[in-house]
Length: 238
Image (cartoon, rainbow, N blue to C red):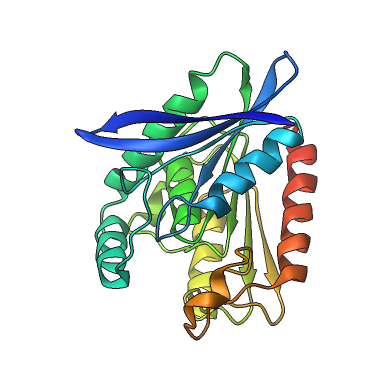
């Protein structure tokens, strides 16, 4: 079981409200930053943090929109994400603010820290790594792979895993190819798992409710990609 709490922190005057999950037993634990999907922090991101804590990780689900709320308007969400895509430094700053909260927790082992993310949260996890964050591992689930600064891949010290649906319309084959070229040029230790038939947001049980083509939950792919992450964590010493 895990102990959970909400933590408020400021980024450029905006109050962010993240979700911390900590194993109940005393000790020093590896730590995982969880970066939420584009609409905002929700039960999906918080649930992933809780699952990680049950497995022996201190996990913090950050907030990159503010107020600990989801954005109800899809147009507003896409505008915000578009602005962040064009401003990697801003994206990295939002990620670093959440990472700082995680690193401040007394239960963590600062030598064993990872960042995972979903949808644009996966992009944020990757941008943290491109910015040189001291991470052992980065994992992106149906994560955007594109960046305005591919040359910064040379800053990546973490090992990288991205889990992508083969039919995801938001991450087409061309984007996957560009990411491969970026990782190779940066001499990164990376891998990409492609899951046949899966579309975007395959880890979120509520994804299909929106009725948007190309966005749907896939239970089997969700389970397979979660196991891939845990195996990856074991390999890197998390």
